[in-house]
Image: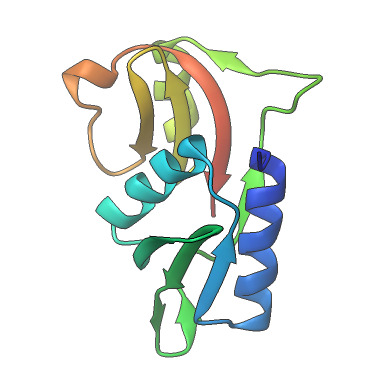
Length: 128
């Protein structure tokens, strides 16, 4: 099973090397995060293949849409926010991935939160 920090490290390294496709070990948690990234146009797509997930990164004018991803919660130090704290955090960060009891959500600075995401949760990572 791949850990979230390993997943973020693989993506950041691929972005730094300007890779078009990468293969990540299969994990349902990572699959949910990839769905969020795909749905919000951060990646071109992903396919489940034998032994992993092939991710196609998205570039515009040779710049990756995902500039850097930084993990906030760690195994030893979990960061939980109430939805009002997330609203305050939105002023400073463009995109945040939050894990709630209802699933994983992308919270953005520009778009208002959907009613079902007006719930606190674990602040997993941010996308700069």
